[in-house]
Each structure stands twice: as C-alpha cells, then as structure tokens.
Length: 270
Image 1 (cartoon, rainbow, N blue to C red):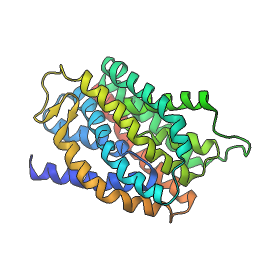
Image 2 (image 1 turned 120 degrees about the vertical axis):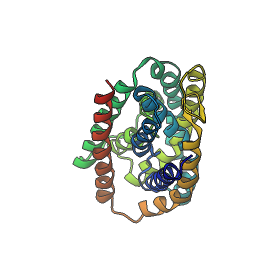
Image 3 (image 1 turned 180 degrees about the horizontal axis):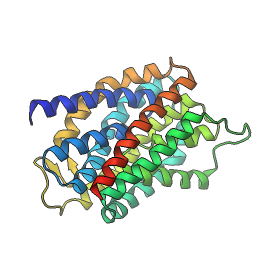
C-alpha cells in the first residue's frame, strides 16, 4: 500500500471514529465516498468500486460500534430495551439486502439510493421538527418492521443505520442522546449480518484488487478500523456536551455534503 493511500485511510478512520461516537454514525456516510474514490484511483471499475466501498465501509462498523457503544453505555445513553426490540428485524433486513438485493442492483443505482436517503435524513434533522408529545416507539411488531427497514437500507448503502434509526427514534420522542447511543449499539448487529452476507455473495467475483475478500477490501478495512477505534470514545464524550439543536445541525451538514458527492458518483457510473 502506498503511503498516500495509507494516510488517506488513516485520516478517514480518525474522522469516522469521532463522528461515530458523536452522532451514532457507523461511518458509512463518510467512508463510502472516500473508499469509492480511492478504489477508483486504483483502477477498480466504477460499478465495482461503489459496491466494494459500501461493503468495506460496513465491515469497519464491526470495530467502530464496539468502541463507541462502550462509552455511550457508561454515560447511560443506550436504550437496551430498544436494541433488543429492533435487532431481530435488523438481522432479517440486513440478510435480505446483502444476500439478494445488493447483488442484483447496479452500483450506480446504489450510489443514487445512498444520496436519496441521506438527503431525506439531512432534511429531517435540519428542520428539527418536533414530534407529537403522545407519539412513542411501537410495540414488538412495529419494532420488527422498523428494524427490518433499518437493516435493509443500511446494507444497501453501507452505513451503520444512524441515518435512518436516529430520525425514526427521535420522531418517536426518544431523546436525541439516547437515539444516538442506541444507534451506535445497533451498528454491530447491522454490520455482522450484512458482512456475513457480503462475504458469501462476493466470493465468485473476478477482477478484484489485491487484498480483497469478496466485496471487502481488507487493507482499507484494517487501517480505517485501527484509527477509528481510537477516536470513537472522544466523539461519544463530546456528544454529551453539545446542545441537542447544534448536534442535529452538525449531523445535517455532513449528510448534505456527502449526499451530493454520491449523487454525482451514481450519475457518472450510470
């Protein structure tokens, strides 16, 4: 690996880890654009580079989520009752996305889908709409469906689910800090289910870059993971010092920037 590529991945990992702790992001919203750029520069075909970026991004969440959720748990921010309720649906939705839908859909379509859902999440956060005081999280069946949606969309765009789960939980009157901490905890089952499916579905791929295991680019995963686990606890602590409105604005700002990049990426790959 060239030193420039290593530095790009290391800086990305450091930023991703901090943002994972700060906003409950698994980091995919940052990693997917960066990894697709790096893989493209290595000569990987545009369509494949987008898919590999999504999967490699998802694989790093296995490490980032553990580091981040430990800090959120110590600060009392994780709603473990919601984790238990959402996790079964997440596993089901993630499995469907990684074993079936992801393989059938083109990389350009996935990039545009990424941009659409990130833009929507950004709008919801930026407007800071207040939910009805009486609205609460649904029961078991509702949480099963909500988890399925989170897992499926996360698998298709390579994110830890915060871009869906945080707005959904705050919409149901879950406090923003609890929504972020719970989202961080949900990142692990999302990543585990998706990565397992991606490895199985990508074993027969041709024209892969050095160090690839199916859709996963192992060198990128390892460098990003090593840096991100160091900075994630700092982000988690910062999340409990920032006011709620400012936290949502930070979330929205990053989402808009990255959505525009992926729209452009998808259009160029079409």
